[in-house]
Amino acid sequence: MVAPGFECFIARSLVTGRPDSGEWTYVRKDGRRFRVLLTVSALYDDDGELSGYLGVSQDISARLSMERELKRSNAELEHFAYVASHDLRQPLRMISSYLTLLQRRLGAGLDTDSQDFIGFAVDGAKRMDRMITDLLEYSRIGRSGSPPEAVCLGEMVSLACASLQNTLSEAGAEVVVGSNLPTVMGNPMELERLFQNLIGNAVKFQAEGRRPKVEIGCRETPSEWVISVHDNGIGIEEGELDRLFQIFQRLVGRDQYEGTGIGLASCRKIAEHHNGRIWVESTLGEGSTFLIGLPRPAAGHSA
Image (cartoon, rainbow, N blue to C red; front, side):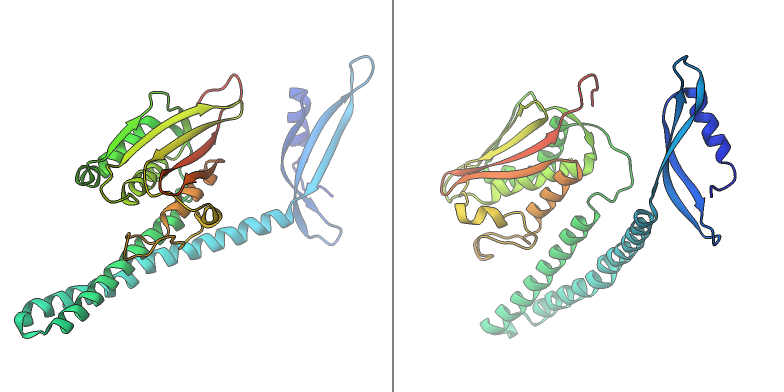
C-alpha cells in the first residue's frame, strides 16, 4: 500500500515525460510504514500515447537506519571533541604551568637531576597537548558541513607557506611552486592543511647540513590531477611505505624529529574526503615525492 499523496508524485513524472526518483512512504498490511526509493517512468504505446507508468521501488529502511546511527555517532564524536579540547587539555596546561612556576621559584635550589625531571614532565605535558590538538583536527576532517567550493590549489600552497614562514626561514628552505596547479572543488581549510603538513614534513625530515628544497607541481591524466610535493630530505625505507599514512605511526625516533604521528594520516583522510588518494615514492637518503590524485571534472564541467 502506498501512502496518500502518491498521485502528485506520479503526476510530476507524467508531466515531464522523464523518469523521476525520490523517497516515498509505503504502508504494510499491518499499518507499519517504511521508506523506499521510488523511480517512476511514463509508458507510451506505439502511437506515442500515454498508456500508464512503471514504478520501481527499493526498500531503504536499512540505509536510513545506518544514517541515523551515523548521525548519532557524529554527535558523540562532537561531544568527545569538546571534552578533549577543554576537559583534557586544561589539566595538561595546569600541570605544565605549575611545574614551570615551581622550577622558576626554586631555581638554584634544585639539583641537576631535579631540573631534568621537571623538564621531562613539562615536555611530556606539552607533547600530549599537541597530540590532542592534532587528534581533534583529524577527527574534524570531512565534518565541516559546508558544501564544496572552488579552491585554487596555488593559493592554498601560498597560505600554507605563510603559516610556515618562521619554520621555512629558520631552515633556509626553498619552496618552488609550479604555475599549473588547478582549481578543484573542495574544502579550502582542509586543502591548506594538506599542503601545510606535507611542506612542514619536507622541511623537518631533512639531513643535517642540507638546505631543504620543496618542489610542488601538477600533471594531468584523463581522470585526475596528480599533485606532487617533492623534497630532498632523508627519504623513507621501502619497507616502511605501506604504514606511512597510518595514524600514530612514527618511522623515526622522537629524539631525532618531533611529531605526533598524525599529520600524514590527516593528509590521507583529507585526500579521501575529496574523493582522491595519496601515495609516496621515496629513495632513502635522497628524498621523497608525495603524490595526491584529485578527480578532474567530467568533460563540459569546470571546477
